[in-house]
Image (tube, rainbow, N blue to C red; front, side, top):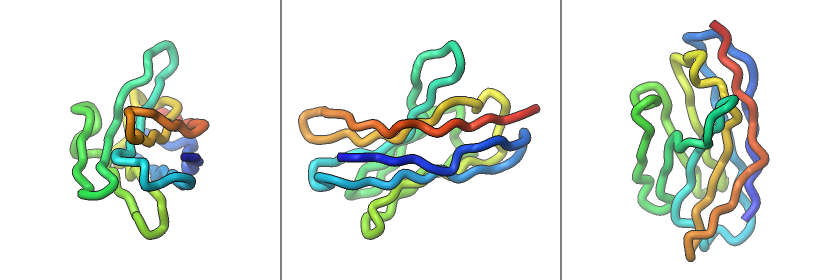
Length: 116
């Protein structure tokens, strides 16, 4: 499985960004897609996940009601709509695919910077 993120950038606090992840490879092995992030000096943390079949979602408390994760199984993409961004959302965002056997695939990451 290969993952390629796009859509990061610089935005002012209160603004919006949309991240996308193109998914390719052995798609039948994937059961969950997700976004993680790593802020400067901090450990990587979960942002949101979505099951590939049922579309069930899960969010970190810090992003609930601001971020929305979605997937398109026809186009083989996953997106993260981020609204009302805060400086503490500044991080490198990574696309993740959890595969059968609990194997993880990761994208290269895309930087999101939120200025105050």
